[in-house]
Every structure is written in structure tokens, then in C-alpha cells.
Amino acid sequence: MAVVLLFLSLSILLVSAAATGQLCGSRGNYTANSTYQSNLAAVAATLPNKASSSSQLFATATAGQASDVVYALALCRGDTVNAAACRDCVATSFREAQRACPFQQGATVYYDDGEQQQQQQTCVLGFSSDDLLVPSMTENDTLFQSFQNDSFFGDPGTVTPDVHDLLTRTAQDVAAAERRYATAVMDSVSTVTRTLYSLAQCTPDLPTGDCLACLQRIIAMVNTTTAVRLGGQILVLRCNIRFDVNLFYQGQPMRRVTPSSIAPVPTTTTITTGKSM
Ligand SMILES: *[C@@H]1O[C@H](CO)[C@@H](O)[C@H](O)[C@H]1NC(C)=O
Ligand SMILES: *[C@@H]1O[C@H](CO)[C@@H](O)[C@H](O)[C@H]1NC(C)=O
Ligand SMILES: *[C@@H]1O[C@H](CO)[C@@H](O)[C@H](O)[C@H]1NC(C)=O
Ligand SMILES: *[C@@H]1O[C@H](CO)[C@@H](O)[C@H](O)[C@H]1NC(C)=O
Ligand SMILES: *[C@@H]1O[C@H](CO)[C@@H](O)[C@H](O)[C@H]1NC(C)=O
Image 1: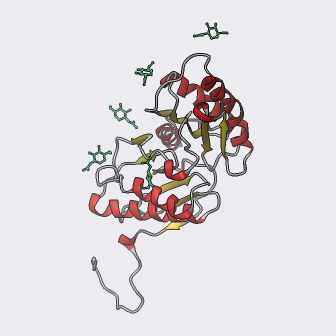
Image 2: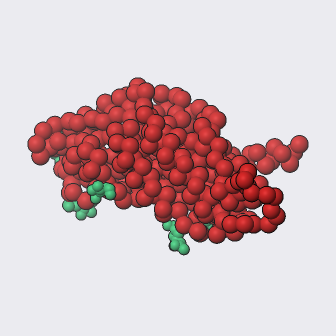
Image 3: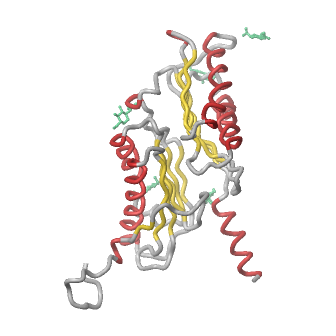
């Protein structure tokens, strides 16, 4: 019993690390007490409530005109059940941007407070003097990337395609879902009895094709070194993926994915032993 409890608390520790990532914009700085600063303050005042009261946990805001205009968008993770947690996350992200990128006209922030319970705050915020509300203007740079240091006992040659299968299937579900959010699970990765959970999300304003392209681009960044890790995540402003051996999101996985490496033997063939593929 003690061993089980120790294992459980250790599992929670492994996935609960707080994390923040920032990309500071390259468009220049605003000055203290400028119109740009007050426009930024205006979007910072409205966006947290707008995002948290949206059924998609997503909102955009614009303030000001011409050279002083500020565009902003925020997205909370799709399993957020507590509206206050979403609101607080977006508000904290504005403060993180101010801290990490002082007086910069644009910034992108990922914030995760690492809580495991219903209070969890996980969100992405972007603001800029460029119109980042147009999906084609989206910043594609990696906002945050992190992998567990420990790996599976498994052959990277078979684990990697399985992990890619799981993430790609999740991405297809995201692109087909109106909320642009999906989760999945693979019960047995690469003949190792190891469960792997996945989550992916796009901003809901991305068309299906752009959402899928965004996710495929970051899934391709999961290589033979990082696919065997016990967990990992990659975020850009408009889409993100995460996988972990521990269940790290609220609710049950939306889909079970069977790895192709243990795909059932076709019914038309006779019983064979050993690997045929
Ligand atoms: C903006 O401000 C930062 C820090 O205050 C400074 O490092 C950077 O050079 C400034 N950028 C421009 C374009 O003035
Ligand atoms: C900005 O406004 C504050 C409060 O009105 C004032 O204390 C500060 O000196 C001003 N800064 C600049 C650079 O004008
Ligand atoms: C980001 O990638 C998309 C798809 O490849 C492209 O349409 C867009 O122009 C890129 N954005 C930037 C700022 O380069
Ligand atoms: C991985 O190890 C490095 C170096 O020891 C450490 O800084 C980092 O926090 C570890 N990462 C995780 C996810 O535990
Ligand atoms: C795999 O991706 C990681 C993280 O981006 C990178 O550090 C590493 O060099 C890559 N490894 C290979 C073999 O490409």
C-alpha cells in the first residue's frame, strides 16, 4: 500500500512542474505612458474575462487605431473546467509578458502553474502591433518545448512511429472538432505494456486544414530521441501537443488508438508466429 501511494505521488510530481515560455516580439518598443501602452492595458483588462466566459476558452481583442493598434488573443487548455482558472491564467500571462519583455510591442506567452486539480491554469497569450488575428500572420516559432529526461525501455525504431500514430490521430480529431481540442490514449506502445496519453489543441479560429498543418509541423519535431521520453510537449501560438505516461488532463481520453506495430493479424491470413512486418 505504501509503495502504491509513493508511486502515485511520484507520478503526480512528474507531470506537475510549473512552466512558462515567452517569445518577445521583434517589432520594437513602446514608451512609458504612450497611447500604445494604454491600448495594451485595455486589452489586458478585457481579454481574461472574454476568454474565460467563452465556451471555446478562446478570445481575441483589439484596441486603438492605426499605428497604436494592439491585437491580442488568448486560449486556455481545452480541459479547463474552472472559468476563474482560465481568467487568472490569461491575466498572469500579461504580467509574465511585461516581466519578460518589458516595453515590447509584441509578445507570446505560455503559462502553466503546474496544479493538478480543478484549479489548473494552462493557457497561451499573444499580443502584437501586427494583426495576429489573421491566421496567416501567425508566429510559427516554438514558444515552449520540454521533454521528460527519462525514457521508455523500448526500441526507438518502433516506439517513435507509435507515438507519431497517437499524436497524428489526436491531431486529426482536433482538426475535425469545432472546439479544436482532443485527447487520446494508446494502451500499449511498441509491444511494451505502457500507456501513453495525448492531448492536442488549435486556436478555434484556425480552419481545419491550417490546424492540421500546424499540428503536423510540431508533431514532426518529435524525433527518435524525444519520442521515447516519458512525456513531452511542444507549443506554438496557435497549436500545441502534449503526451505523457501519466493521465495529465481532466476527464477520460476521447479515443483509444491501437499502435500499428501491434495491429491485429488480418482475418484472411492463417495464424503466423513472429513479426511479419
Ligand atoms: C527595446 O527595449 C529592450 C529592453 O528595454 C532593448 O533591449 C531593445 O534594444 C529595444 N528595442 C528597440 C527596437 O528599441
Ligand atoms: C508616466 O506617468 C506616471 C503617472 O502619471 C508618471 O509618474 C511618470 O513620470 C510618467 N512617465 C513618463 C516617462 O512620462
Ligand atoms: C507560418 O506558417 C504558415 C503555414 O506554413 C504560413 O502560411 C505563415 O505565413 C507562417 N507565418 C509566418 C509569420 O511566417
Ligand atoms: C532534466 O534534467 C535537467 C538537467 O539535470 C534539468 O535541468 C531539467 O529540469 C530536467 N527536466 C525535467 C523535465 O525534469
Ligand atoms: C531531437 O529533438 C531534440 C529537441 O528538439 C533535439 O535537441 C535533438 O538534437 C534532436 N535529435 C535528433 C537525433 O535529431
